[in-house]
Length: 203
Image 1 (tube, rainbow, N blue to C red):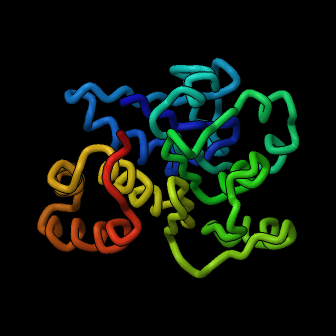
Image 2 (image 1 turned 60 degrees about the horizontal axis):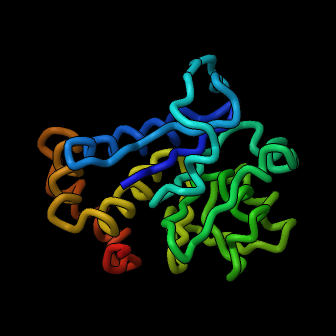
């Protein structure tokens, strides 16, 4: 499986790195989880610098694509040179957005039902675009998921795991990353949120 974590400059570390870290636990099973960006080096708002592992073309051929959030997402959405590099297809890919990443999905025409989860700062921007924002951390419509709140990145990762690796492996990985002594509760909570919206793995 090829998994793309789309990460743009001025990114939020919690969005991209939590998802990448959780999904990276599948590396022994042959999963390739890659930070993808239009530039060779990206920097978070707090100054963390990261070298990309792939350019944005990787996202177009990946099995799953998660679009991280950041403080300049609105600028990147308005940048035709960046957006034209993304040619995502929900008929063959799992596609998820974290917080302001929903603005990217809107720009790409990937919110066909006009509903998306996001964070409080992005909510008015989406609503001005005619998108309804529920008071929820996670939502799925077909092969498209949206999440709101930095730590809901764990739900996006769990959703990808459940869809592409199955429940047993999802439980194993979530249990591993859970706070000690809270494994069962952590796993059950995550699955209670993502499992009702999940379907059999992509073929």
